[in-house]
Image (cartoon, rainbow, N blue to C red):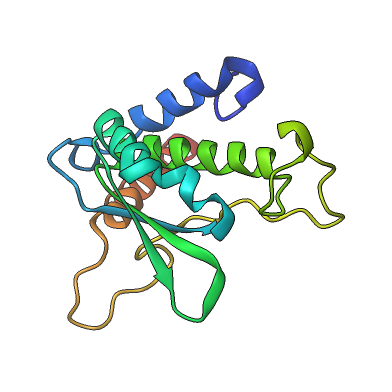
Length: 172
């Protein structure tokens, strides 16, 4: 079947299925509470920002998410990219930003300097890792008296409901 197998239905089908599986309160355009933070190599930042912020503005206009780039204290190799908004908009903006980072790494050979003739050079033996997203609040238990992440609560409820349904089918 299609499921999560990108080869079976293509990336569009995988993304559509993921978006369709979101609980209504999370998928709602009014719910702009999702935040995604990941690192961007310093030599790729200008490709993400664009001249006078033009690329970030373009990504924000196309996706509806807010994209910010911030310094990481004590790190002169990366800056932090923070994308916030509706879950689907955040995912779309993430793909745009990662595409810009990948294109910039291809042009610079991942070294921060242009490749000869604009062509990618052979990557170093240990290529830079792809950005690893960190979803705010995921995997963390809320402190006592603190409300948990609404996305995680909705996903937990959906999973519990699904598991209960399987148990009832097995019992029948």
